[in-house]
View 1 (spheres, one colour):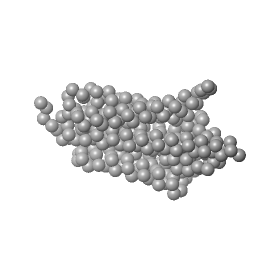
View 2: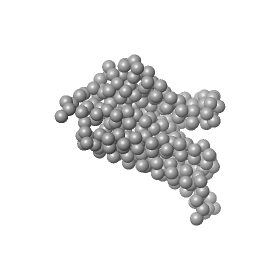
View 3: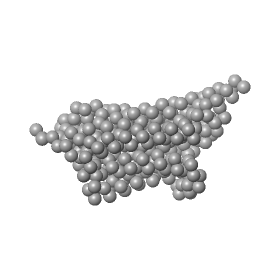
Length: 105
Length: 158
């Protein structure tokens, strides 16, 4: 029988923090490109459509930050329960933020 | 019966999305009962979530870029413009959140969930968030579909 541990692994913690940042970034970018059309046009010019550019940016940011955080070991120092709560809160706030933005503006 | 490529892409997108959501529910239930014996099954389930959501993204993105503009015009000219203005706009950006969670799930599942309470809690949290956002996306898809339907019905009645 293995003894139970209460720490997240290095990669799990690093990519959790990367996911939190990417999820918040995704909503902020959606707001920004909707409010500022030159940004939307610029994103259209990168990958043919602003939606495609946003998706690629999200994926690159998630894996890029995850690899950086894993190497640096910063995320491991965060309390795991706090990281879990942060991720859940980021998803709820970012999701509600998107719906509220498009409902109101 | 005339089935076109756009129909196959759209239905494939919805099918992959619901399969990914169901796979996340499967991972959630397995993680609730995490043992050494089901560790490989949890990892396979997490991989299935990531694969299904990536496929849903590629198919949905392809359809959105190539075929949606015509339907968007119909929705905006019909009685339910909010099907685009609220539901499609939210769905196309909310999907990236689900995708990031789906890509993260296999990383969590690589841990020994049966021997790590925090990793198990993280797997439960991530898989549940995928289920909830996945269901919201499916619901939004149904509203968008209905937006096109009521626009076409109104045009037909006229």
